[in-house]
Amino acid sequence: MENRTDSGCRLSIVIPVYRSAQILPLLVEQIHAEMCEEGLDGQFELVLVNDASPDNSWQVIRSLAATHPFIRGISLRRNFGQHNAIMAGLNHASGEFVVLMDDDLQHPPHAIGDIVRALDEGYDVCYTNYLNRQHALWKKLGSQLNDWVATHLLGKPKGLYLSSFKGLRRGVVREVIRYDGPYAYVDGLILDVTRSITTIDIEHQARHEGEGNYNLSRSIALWMKMATSFSVLPLRLATYAGFALAALSLLMIAFIVVERILHPDYPRGWASLIATILFIGGIQTLCIGMIGEYLGRAYLRLNHKPQFVVASTTWANPQQHEQA
Image (cartoon, rainbow, N blue to C red; front, side, top):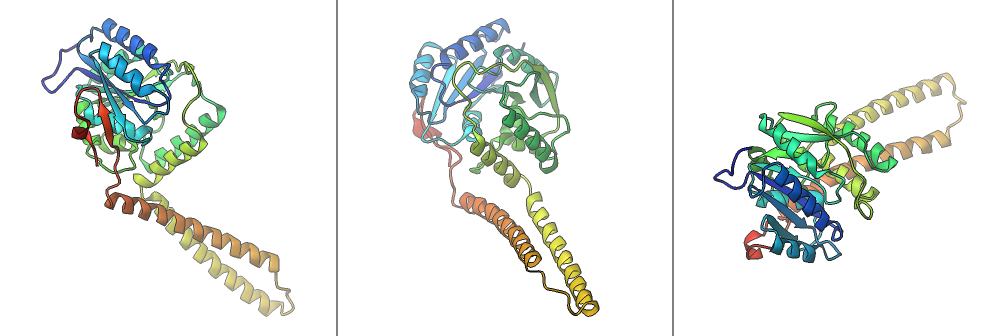
């Protein structure tokens, strides 16, 4: 593999950290061992982003950084979410290649070398495809829905699994971090930049300790972020629904007029009337809510809601690294 570039190290590994104090020492040990095996010792950095974890993850990161010069620790002032924490790491990564992975050891460190080799072949991005996903059934079903939505909203290539374990070239990272809005969705930003994407197969490992941090509500919030931050298709669907309901209403009016002429004694249907009102009212409320979601995001961005705010780092004055 090549040596360091003038702009920084050969490889940056960015990991958002949340409730992983007990896992971090083993994670660092395994990554270091794999980098030595790949001949990258002294040519890589490990960027650990503490997303305001309620345990003592930051103290562990600081302790590890004191004994491992390749570790760069970042602590955020509050919990901004996984994708915003990743953006914080990307803004501080200097590697020619950048690998993103989780902190729970479900992503095998030995696959990092395979990702780098795929990027070395000239691809902009390398995603990983899990051969045996160690997730609950509801997460697998939600992932299938997310995959379908991403294909239609983001133009994701069919068959591409948007895993959180992936690698990016420096040029893609530069374009991704140009986005400074508060609702970061890394995969959407990547797909906006390039279609030069490849995949490698990996074995998805069981979580080393504890439970995953993504519950149903967080998964829905992430889906809404994807749906409303990178596509206007939901608004377009609301428009189509409005046209369809208007056409249906005209047909119903014509039907009722004809029925009243042909059958003057035709009884009025209270139940069908209530059902129609509730249906149309529900569609209207849904469309108004969708518009409100877009307007709310635009309002918060205009008011400079921060994407992330750095409280401290393991290497410099934290006030030099605040992101509005």
